[in-house]
Length: 244
Image 1 (cartoon, rainbow, N blue to C red):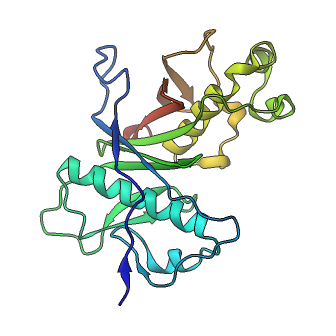
Image 2: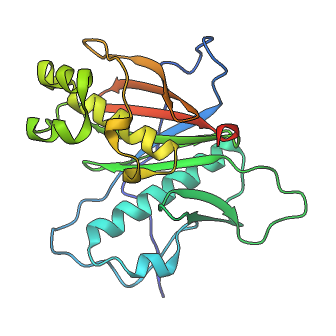
């Protein structure tokens, strides 16, 4: 008999320091993180585990390493726990991907009176899965990295240009904050690396600390929030669907 996969630890619910901001019409959000089970580098995925809700068995079956398997299932489990907190029954839902592999929720069989589903974003970093839900009329993007992580200065030219590149060269310790911010924006626009990170640019303070700003990209105005939580630098971005 197959065992149902279970996570390594408990979900920790997080909040943005800008949750109660009155500066703009901020959508309701729910954020959480979950530890990812540590595996040996050459370990293969288990074959006797039943995947939890929101996992696609065909997608899971393609993973060749236990590390990727655990990351994927932890992220999906985490989204499921956030949805329960949101008040949504997950049994009839699935996570699908668009052409840029951006995830979203979908009904397996749409009910007659289905309410709009929240937007989702999922990330993985250094032993943690992190996820965010947002109101249905916004796309949300979340990214997190250890605040102490360093980015090689040789990579700065690939992520910034002009004044922003000069800022990175002057304050390289801010690179990870800027990188997570750019990744969150890429996710909120459902473009991922199809959006050149150099096009996600703003005037950064020094130090960045807890910072929020609106970043215009084309006809979109992205609301960005970035802050430090324990060992993590977390960035959250929102793109109004009406802007598309």
